Image (cartoon, rainbow, N blue to C red; front, side, top):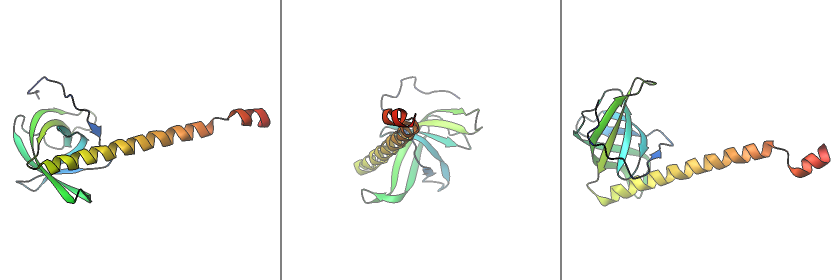
Length: 143
């Protein structure tokens, strides 16, 4: 599969911290699962390869309301697609366009939550690792 545009993404995408399904508005069928996301683009994992350069009309239902929305609706142009050798599914990249600015704000809030979740997990791992190492006083009095 080919890449439409060789320009690199300048926005930082956040890896999905939870499963987030994307549905095609026209067929109402699941299109794929979000791998990473930013206010400008996303990467999807899907069973079938999307058509490169095609504009899709997507909907993401939300488990919990964000900014009083229970779903996000947007257009997305597929820019590239390739088969993932590990999963045998297809990874594809999209440029996002929002019909309402509020939907872009919802996407920003989702990515902010994912950033916070990732930060919390990193801190928890570091705290666990630090707890396993004996401190100065433990070495001094238990040794």
